[in-house]
Amino acid sequence: MKVLNLALTAAALSTFVVSTPVLAGDPVVGKQKATACIACHGSDTYPGIFYTLQLAGRNADKLTVKTMKYKTGKILHPMMNMSTAFFDEKEIEDISAYYQSLGKPAFTSSLITIKGDDDAPAAK
Image (cartoon, rainbow, N blue to C red; front, side):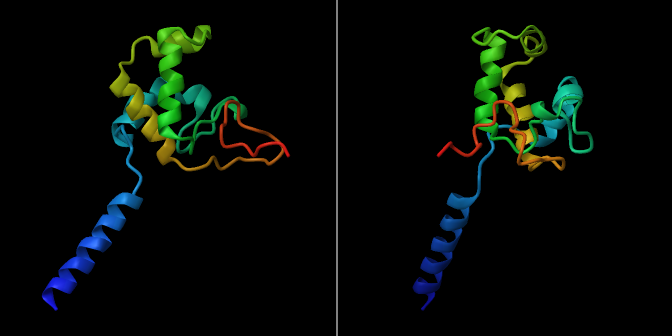
């Protein structure tokens, strides 16, 4: 009986661990580092100056990859290239984790697609 209980407990714990998303960065640290990002991309209390640039709820891994492309100059955008130049990869991971932790933006519309949103439904 003890062996069965132990096996069931181990199975339940492994299911929980596997199903829990793991963020590469630290969202708490990311919130502190994101002060340069908030004006355009928003925060937990402010939607940002451009609705189409909101990052809340976006996948942290995808945000990290794209932001690193700005940092390395693979994507050219003067404001983003300059803004990301002073962050290291760990800080970018933290900021990405922060934005993912926010959930979807409060101000959403099915008529407007967030710029660069890879989760947009495919055309039929």
